[in-house]
Structures are given as C-alpha cells and as structure tokens.
Length: 289
Image (cartoon, rainbow, N blue to C red; front, side, top):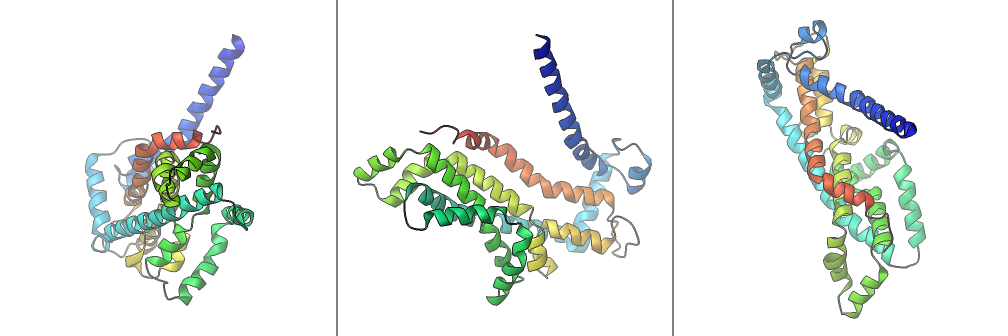
C-alpha cells in the first residue's frame, strides 16, 4: 500500500515538474505580449500587463513592411500544405507496396529508407541546393515544397502499419473478388489506415511548418520567406532585441513574442483536432491481425 502511494506520488510530482518545465515558458510568452519592453525588464516575469498592449503589439507587427508577416504566413501555408499533400500521395502507396508486395530490391529500399531517416537534414542541404539550382528552381516555392515532400519517415510508418495490422488474407480475398490493386489500396487499405495517415500528415505538417534552414538557403527574396525565416529577418532588420531601430515601427520583445505565438498556433490547432487519430495511430500496429 505504501509502495503504491509512493509510486503515485512520484508520478504526480514528475507530471507536475514536466508541466512547469514546459508550461511556464509558454505562459511567459503569452504574458509578454501584454507588456512593454520596459515592463518585461522591471516587472515580475509572470505578471499581466494589459489587453491594450496586445492590440498595440498587433498593430506594430502588421504595420511592419506593409504587413509582410501576412505574406510570410501565406507562404508557410503554401509550402506546408503543398509538401504535406505530395508526401501523403507518395508515402501511402510506397509504404503499402513495400509491406504487401515481394519484389527484387525490396530489402535494399527498406534499408535506404531507414538510412535516410537518420541522416541529418543539414547534411542534405548542399546536394539539394545544387539539384534545385541545376534545374532552375532556386528562389521558387518548388525549391522548398519538393524537398519537404521527400518524407521517408512517413513511408516507414505506413509500412509498419500495413505489415502488422492489415492481414494478407483480406487482400487475397479482395483479389479473388476481382478488385484491382488500385481498388484494394484506395477502397480497402486507405479507410483502414486513416489513423496512420493522419499521423503521417501531422508529422509532415509539423516538419514543413517548422522548416527554417531549407527555405533560408533556397530563398533569397524576402517576399518568398516562410514564417520561421521571416521572424529571423524581422529580428535582424529591426534590432528587436536591442540596439537602434531604423524602421520607424516599434518592433520589440512583445511584438516578437506575438509573432512567435502566431507561428506555433497552427501546430497547436492541428494537434488538438487530430489528437484522437494520433493516439489511435500510435497503437494501431501494437497487435498483429
């Protein structure tokens, strides 16, 4: 009994410590938008400022460079949705084919998929840049969308789901009934694989939305930047974290905090919407059959 209570207390303390460790910085980020730069330096870290300061920070942020943050947001949506759709169109058939078809070179493809997953993304930037430059796609949306659409982790997730969850007998029965291979994929496998497809879509979305180094290297036009590289340009061009500001618009710590909230809000919304499917996708391959 004592051991059980001790274990429960330990779990609760660990949970509380985790919530404080991750939650306090997020809470501070939200509260920072309610203060001025001077208040951030002089008042308590978790003190609340005023709702008027949020409106002022918003006005300053959208007033910078004729509202270019809206352009950066639309660019992020374009790059993220475009790469996610292409990734799904490639990952689902590829993972299913690797799991349910036996062909020469299958093991090599699986091995290369695993190897590609562990290669640091920064190591691929130079080859990708040279490839995009060779076909004239640098400084275009495609130079960001196409590399982000290459998502071997998604292929492996679909492969694991198809190999451990979908019985071969179901596929054989469909073939005996005269269903084509494409029909088996679209009418049988895809409806059953909704949890893992949502999981792949979520991870692909997060990977593309948070991309910084790839668009930073591929894009030279600030009007093509996504939110992540745009925030870096915002801080660099306005000296938001200190120094002289020559833009005429007071972009300081509260405005940067508000921009950071804008950049993470889509991921939070997508996570809340897809949470049920994500949990189902994590446990879908736990049992065979």
